[in-house]
Length: 303
Image (tube, rainbow, N blue to C red; front, side):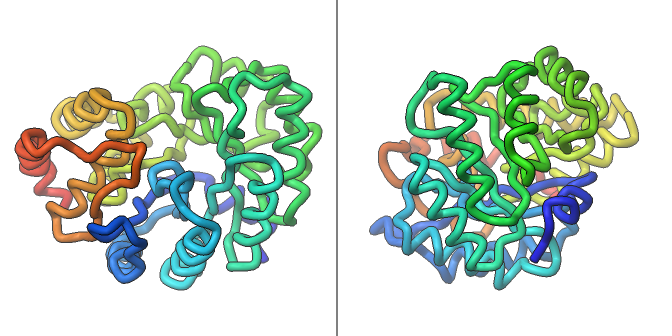
């Protein structure tokens, strides 16, 4: 078993990939396609892979599908990079999912926000504390959407959860994140988790680990972004951002759910398994596929 300390050390620097979960046209789970995707992903040196995260449509999976996705990810990637399993929904389901993931061989747990928005701090501490207590694995909290915490609240969570070893920021509020980091210091490992387009901001405050949905399509591009950020090569980094990242994120911002739909469409376009998204997420419109092809032209050196 990977301990929280060991997991943290493995997350020290690099790209964390967030693979999509491929579905067939009838919206059934495409495990053969997932195996193919993960096998190709495993050719690249990543610091971790998240099984059934937000990009992996965890909220659309049945318990049996969730178990199958985590187990297959561990089977294909395990040993090459830590496997972190996403959990969420409500308190009992998140706890059960964490136990399920630990049984499947995952190395860590990523706790997504609970179903109830704008909950009281006491309830939020209880939610995350129960997930942390469910296994001996290292816990990462994903701050996104309504789970937007003050520095004092992050400190409270860190004190209440011994297995909490890392923090994945999905707010892209660099000022607040810097305040959180200043308050807690090295108690947690800090991860940039709002998207590839936010890498310059995160790396400007010393972060050296980020989560990438682009990695599911073009791991070389994600690694190039990371390398340019680490070297503080501003010219190279911003060239990559403006040419390869900004156009994608502009399209993804058009409709809720496109952060998954666009990546799945691109997966299909490069010969990997994407497939449709499950409702309520919308699929990319046919007329927007041409825009994605134009983006892939810019990505050719990294495909």
